[in-house]
Length: 507
Image (cartoon, rainbow, N blue to C red):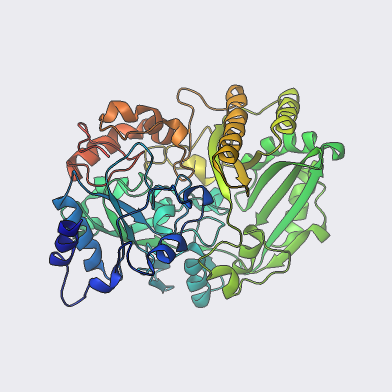
């Protein structure tokens, strides 16, 4: 790879030396840098394919050099782009077993500056920043502004927004990408473009179409106004505590509730029963919330003692599953490392028709059978139903009641433990087929799932139909068209990238 290394240096800007940002396997910090942002232990094993080089870009010229060097070696080198390292299938820092092409990692973690302008209610955020860093920077300027994004503070902004991004403000403000107003991108030619110079097609594609169109350096996002006091709560019910009836009512209530209220449900097997945790946030004080739930959702049994009032920023530990009362200090928002690292598998689904009580009871029985699979139910409705399916690449809008995330975590290492746990996740997913969307069976891009298919063979758009329709539905055709125009040589490719019409070279 010496020719690639020379090309990388030759394409760099001498005024911003690149040598100190390059790590090769013989460098003593290579493995620490590699593992610093690997958040799924499935891809942190001795047998996991390793890059031949890591570039920790600290200036935009480093990104341009990486793209130019990769473009000069299209068939012999493959580029992976990492912002936070939360890619569920490890695509941002690893390579699938069927790929034999050497790869390098373009690590964006040092490109993390954030500029918040409360006057215009916008912020420029570089893609190596984390959601926690963004939330903290906003809170420093205003206690009554926020950004609609995920609840895990260690997630990288780049990966989150390029896949769509959602969180507990989405019923009022939409997805993260619904609140992007500009961007800076390095395209396949190594040029830096903003919204005006890239054009509306490419700007549309990088708001939820995945990392297939270039390297986004930064997004300009529109901030959301929040009240000075919001309320969070957590209520748990087991099967013996009328859980089925509460969930049955929730699926009618949550998608139709006032947009100030977001209530997700986490269902899991605990001590030989099934337990549902109703985890919510209301943009207002608890007295309004309690009046609302007493009238429209009395089955929940929400009480004043279940509720915690605080500023919006102080709700972030609640959503990140820290103990009640934890403050949103640096340890919560500014740490780039999750508290616990596990092996994990995720899948997703969309529910478009309420599930009747016998159906819910059958699902609980299946959960008891597989035991290790959790399911998170996230309600839609509100603003999510008002935005057109074609407004961004993310198509799952009106007509969807709630989204399911299937979660399996395990501590035990080894291939057999992985096989067993992944198989159980797939078994639960297969069982849910009658209850979820169909033609296509839809999935969420941020919950990347290789079971939906791969396009590693360079087979063009036809080979990508499976995952392309699941993630993007009818928007897939427009994405392929844009990809074929802006990246005809398929430089920005991975196992589930948007293909060009011909999709060469192969992985």
